[in-house]
Length: 232
Image (cartoon, rainbow, N blue to C red; front, side, top):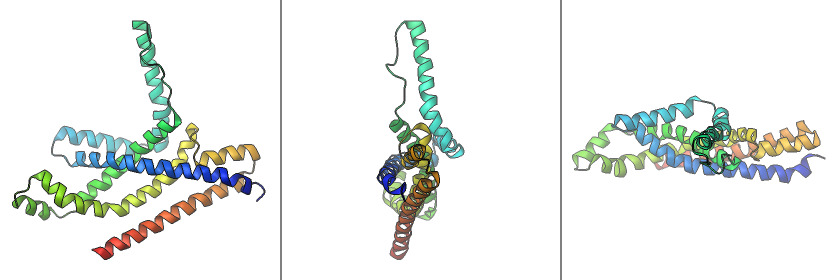
């Protein structure tokens, strides 16, 4: 307790950052995921291919690698481009090629969550009976109108529970952002452990904070799912 109480405000601050970056990632990833999901459902082969490449890449590679690629790889690529430009044209193309940890965190979390949300959304759309699309078209609706007024409202309702589970998974995965010095809960814990050497006490406290957050949101998801089932 001698180490936990003084460190608690710092750890809670880190937990707030973890929660904030998760919410931002889910909002931006949700928007991206809807478009990527629609791309995966598109009848246009090129659009479908783009959606498939994006989803397969970010679902098929570890989030850790994605974070490192965005934080270190992209600036490295830009730096090489800058050096080429200086060598050939005598002036810098970019004033700075560094990546802010906040920018890298938002990009990596958004791109990762967007890929998973795309599949959740696609599954929700495909779960709607095909007869409903056919019925809407027989009433004179275009494909776009049928999607907008008939299919998508039902699909959004069905994807809410798995979206809640994705939020919980993403909240836990924000701990990987500590590798780039992003000061969320895991990074704050690392810094306190380095200062006090109380590794067991502080990491156990961090684990309980994560558990409280994920347990709370999992119960909220369960309540929402039961309410939706009752509504049906």
